[in-house]
Length: 101
Image 1: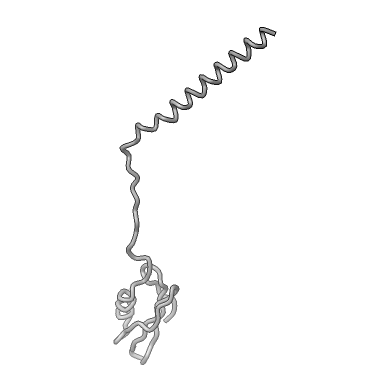
Image 2 (image 1 turned 120 degrees about the vertical axis):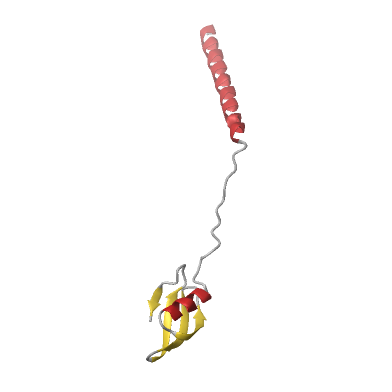
């Protein structure tokens, strides 16, 4: 019976030692206290700017280009080409890719 109590006491001492070792390990995080997390917020060019769409339409040969409609998905530009009135549709993403001419 005494042998059982001795074994239980030794197991309790080992368990208490393990708990104190994990507490010391968990508090060792103070070493990296001077490390700062860097955030990069890309605020520019989340969509096709109206000025960029008009400039791109003018570069494609559209005269008197102006914005007709802006939706979350597209930017519509009207103007005159050599053949007459024309409409160009750009995607409303960075770079203003052409959808339809």
